[in-house]
Image (tube, rainbow, N blue to C red; front, side):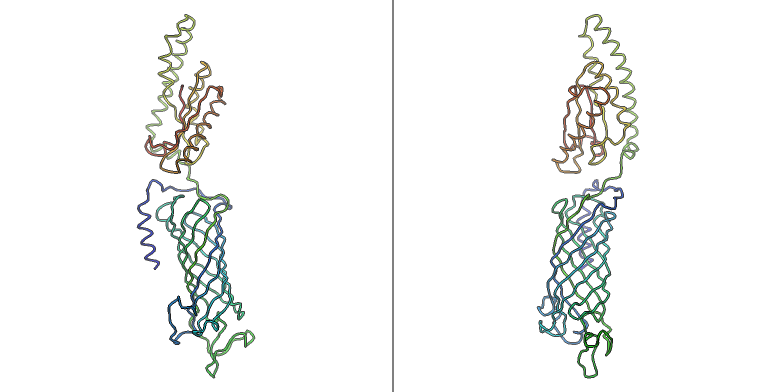
Length: 393
């Protein structure tokens, strides 16, 4: 069953867009916590039924019961997490095919390690619909009916289906194995009748069974993500510049040329105004200022990735303040990530951020127009579209 689920999971996830893979930054202790609540169904296969010839189907009424479980946990990385889980229910041990004779009440508390193979194999994707999560755990189980305790181990598969950023649907299957005295019996007396731990005052005796009690559990419920959820991409500005150093060099050269041209045009403009010939300058001035200057941002961020980028717009800000010129700031987001509505908001906020920087440089706020273009794919690689541009209007 595990191999079948794994094969389907890997085959389906392999078709995801590889551009969505990225490394993530380590989260804080208070990030990526979750709680789970589930309705459970369990079917018992106990050592007492060995050789009795009872029907083995888990759907037989005399061996199955329902209950509930709850868990709290945290993801330490996109692929590895821990949860503390408690399961309480009415169960049915299998001493006979009489359901009333089999009834027991118990609780089961375990610490379980979670392994999100979807994120491990295919990279973290915050909008992935299906995550495939094997787990294993150890803990203690108590039979409340016969007041017995024993260690328990488990292994299983947790499938989560994304309903929203905060809510996931759970479908979970697990196998549990515990000590052979869980159900209250510790063996048989000389007369062949079962001996119960409660009749011995907690002492052992009789012939102990060497097989372990075990049960299968299926669960359906919800996961609720608490507080800050998801993972931030590691800063990628250096990677962008490394991949496109020639383009950065070209921008710097263009900035230097533009500053020199700006000084020349300012001198020409002053001469023209002095001679009352303003018509001679606008065309040349516009040739410089209409070239958009870019300021870059990290994924899903509205703060400027590197303050060095502000150097690129200082020349435009200086020109605008000296010549009382209007500026246009246009924000963008990349279309490969996020929803259209979120990308529109992101592009609007990026434009506002750059506008505020221009104000700090001396440009009057009423001289700046901001526009958000939403998600686009105009530049390659796609991360270059996480930017805002400045130009004279």
